[in-house]
Length: 191
Image 1 (spheres, helix red, strand yellow):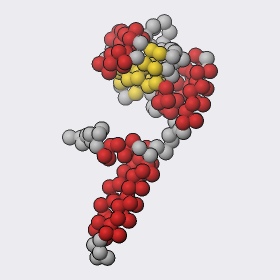
Image 2 (image 1 turned 45 degrees about the horizontal axis):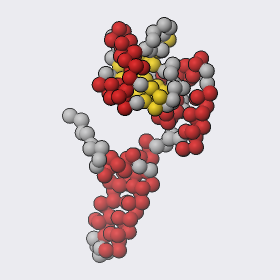
Image 3 (image 1 turned 180 degrees about the vertical axis):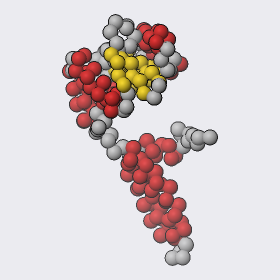
Image 4 (image 1 turned 120 degrees about the horizontal axis):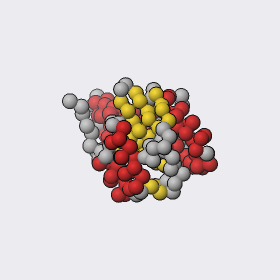
């Protein structure tokens, strides 16, 4: 049985925050224990800071390759300036770094690539990556390709916004959406 932490819990919130926030809380707890407790007891009080130190380390590990806001903006501009041929090469390279075998599709209105790993097939739709917004039609086309090719999952990529109805449809139809800064971050991961 896997442990699932509530997204609203303190520790889940701290994991999504900058690593130094958890460390600052830990230092504050140690300082408060030292100031408020006797010489014999302060170490026990300071031990309560240990979970915050662990969360700080975990958050730092998760954020080690995270791009700054400026780098994300530059990355979005760079990706938006690419031709389809160049963008698809970068996308294919990113998928191969993650261990996928990639097959390009021609003539499929819903999907551009098939990514396979460990016997599981994932359809990739990225041809509209420059579009400022994506709607339900794009998700419906990808869903049709998903059914036609009997793939386990689909992935829709774009730099722009995905409408709320399209996101709702994607969640219901085994379609993962990577958009905007998350797309830049994913394609920028080191090898």
